[in-house]
Every structure is written in C-alpha cells, then in structure tokens.
Image (cartoon, rainbow, N blue to C red; front, top):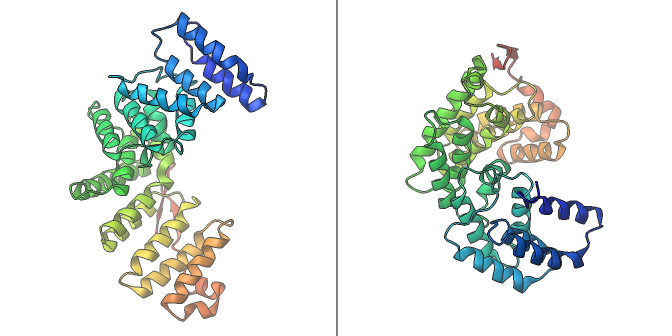
Length: 329
C-alpha cells in the first residue's frame, strides 16, 4: 500500500474514470508530487504514461515511450495485480498512435520481467500471440527461459509455446511443434485416466485442463500449415477421446476433421461434417449453415437437407470411462 506501493494510483484512476468522476486536472500536479517524493520508484514512468493517456498528451506519450526504451532494464511492479493489467491496457490504447514504439516497449517489458505476473497475464490472455504487439522471437526466448527453469515443465506452458509456434512457423520449428503436440496429447490422455498431473503439481490451477477446448484448433492449424491432413486427423481423433461428451468443442473438432478429410477423401469429409452438425452447440446456427454449404460443394447430399444428412451417419456413442473424463465406442 501507499507509500510503498504506488500502483494504487493506477487502480484509483481506473475506477474513477469508469465511474466518470476522474478529476483530469489533478493528474499532472499529482504526478509532479510523486516524482519529487519518490524519484527512484520504477512505477513513476508508467503512472505518467497512464496520466498522459487520460490527458491525451500524444507528444508527451511519444517522448516518454522513447525514454523508456533507452533504459537498460525496464522494470516496474510487474507482480502487482493492480498495475500490470492497466499497463497492458494503456499500451494497447496507444498502439495505433505509436505502433513501432509500443511493440518495442511490450517486447522489452516481456524480456526484462520473465518471471513476473505481467508476463504470465500476457501469456494467459493470448496477447502474446499478436505479432503486431509483441516480437514473436522474444516471446519464444522468454517462454524457453521460463520452461527451462522447471525440472518437469508445466504442460500449460508447453501448450502456450505450441500455440505460438503453430502460428509462427519457421523451418526449424516444424518438428518441435509435432513433438509438443505428441507430448500434450499424452498429458491430456493422462488426465483421462486420473488427476495425477494436478496431484504432482504440474497443473495446480487446472489451467491446462481448462484449455482442453483450445488445443484442437492448434492441431488443425498445424496440419494445414504443414499440409499434413492425415496426421492432423490422427491427432484430432485422439483428442476426441479426452474431450468431455457435452463440451461444445466436440462439434468443431468434427468440423476440422471434415475440412482435413476434404483434402483427400470426400466420403469421410461428408461423414464428419454430419457428425459436426449433430454436435455443434445450439447457438451455432450460422456455423451449421457453413457446414451444409461445404457439403454442397462436395456432393449432392446437401439437396437432402440437414435432417437427412444427419440421419445418414450415426454419431459415435459416448460412455463415461472415469470420474475425470470419457471415451468412445
């Protein structure tokens, strides 16, 4: 708390701004006071950035960003839940005015604070995958640094690394992504049998388990990028074995399998598009129309209508295998 923790001002200004009661005229005098009283506090430049953004002082923001980049180590209260989210938000707001500077600031903060809540929050939010915001190679280097700090790397971090590499392929990363997908499927299959990954402390917040719906899209992206639909289908079919029976992602997995089959086996593509229609959630009507359109381009079956198409293929039965998940017959 104040005076030890100046991040409280970021929280105060955010609250007052959202309530429409922020006294804009008080910001500059307060910043001047804080600079005088706490000249060596690393949070001051970032509080200034927040204040200047509220005041819409574009030139001052530009000068401040440039000054921040000149610092050898760009540190701040990177573990403060009050400041880290606001810093990410303010930098994103200023991105359109200074895209190059903002990207360099984000990347430097990511590099200089690898074990911080700030970096963790960027990884968890998905912002780390946006190449216009963060330098991808910097993110990979930091992720590798964090992962190497563990005797047994947490699967959640491996999943995030796989997500990034699948979006930012390099010739050297193709085999690594495939190895990571194999590893992650093994972890999920382990969850299918027991909760030992949680018990061993590898997934203490169940973050990896909760991301089960995001993993199949990474497989699909990898399969399309590498032009390897057969291997993608193999991985997606394995992912069905550990995806809960009522999880909305099941329909999208079938849809992705249909897309991959469409590259070499039209009959199987239609079959899995039919499975997708039976499994997609009720609020995905637009997506169901897209599936029917795709089928229409492959064959004459679409003339029969959605109901007839669904009746042609019976969705595989599901049975509960354990307290933790399910399997298929």
